[in-house]
Image 1 (cartoon, one colour):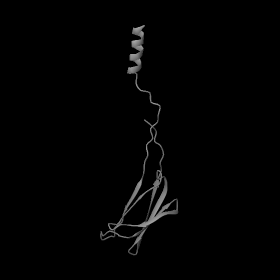
Image 2 (cartoon, helix red, strand yellow):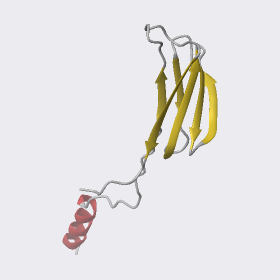
Image 3 (tube, one colour):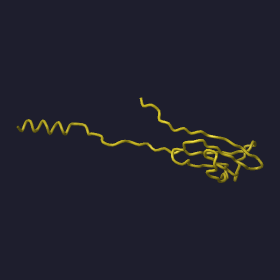
Image 4 (cartoon, helix red, strand yellow):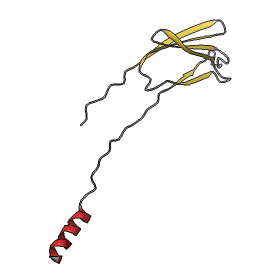
Length: 105
């Protein structure tokens, strides 16, 4: 009887741990715009407008180095566009972010 009990205890101790939880991975997408004039000088204090699906989402100005940084909400999914105005110039661009799951291997 002791021998059977010892085998059962050993089997329980050596068994792998059962996993009863899931893993989630979060992500954030940060948009970094670096704005320069054609002579290489930074476009400091240029006005930046950020649009999501065509609607104005945020606006601010570039810093002294011509940089504008913004963390997109959630997973950043959607059609984004930006407009930068400074020194009598306007530049526009767009970014499409599609967060779909890839097939597991």
